[in-house]
Image (cartoon, rainbow, N blue to C red; front, side, top):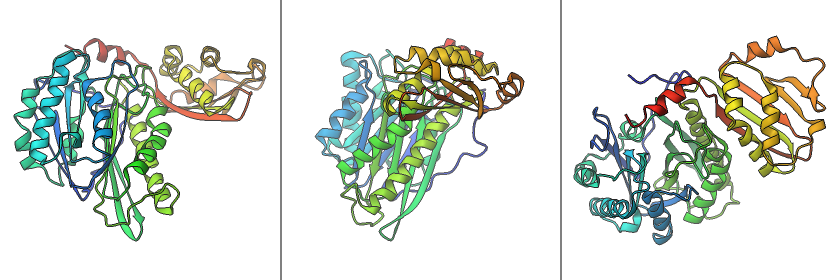
Length: 412
């Protein structure tokens, strides 16, 4: 039985319907022997716009390559989304491309659309051929089953080593109309996104032009999925897609500078940040949720890189797991980041307590209270590198023995 993360939320929200979106999920036996949803289909009304961000890994999967193509070839329009779990269809050569082609063709047939209006995503084991026949065989039935109540099963169908479904939503007023934004994501290990999370799918009934939607998604992505790390490993499958059906009845958002655009962008930022945090709280074997705030860097990009150097350090993460306020490891991580830092003016806070200042341990620092703080589940670390005004916050989790157990048994 799967051990639920101790950081899991007490309640997983139910997602409300989004006009113009119909979903369904099923067990297609793609990899898992125990019956569980592992395949989902989303059908989108005609006129739906789409935005996407994908992994920058040089070993990107076939579905990622198809998604990039479809985003351009389809002119920012979408009618269907197919997602499978258990097999990432990555590093599968020509067979991987064929699996995508066959899946897209079957989905286009049931959706009644062009192939370039179909998006696919896969997650799971790398290097094994995807048995696409199991997907194409059930797509007609999934299309018949699809409805506005398929959110729960669909959000669970994309999980792999995750221990709980990650989903949230917001409702906002735009142009006198109530607009709904619902999203769900998966991710637990192999999380150091170089674009977005493992997989994230967001749906809204707002009317938004494709270019505006794309810019909004990229901006929100940088502040959320691109600011988390579990283990420093970037997936070959990272995909985040945002679909806008336009069924809310608002006047289409055609400019980023309008009040409506700002309202929607704020909701999108909030949804994506919450999903990103949920991924960290389900980090493989995680027992602590860690926020790393970096200030005083040369610029914001430098601050992000310093934060990631800290958040990706096994020595830092294991110290946190052991409730050890070993600030020397934070100094080490700053030093290896390759960014400007003033060693003799470096300052470090753990849980709001000044641990180090002026390049050495603070004369007023006493370790026992900080060690007690480290026993909590939410840890806040701040580092000021004293060279500029750049700042960034990175979120991560600790490394425990459970992380090794999960990944040692991953393909068993």
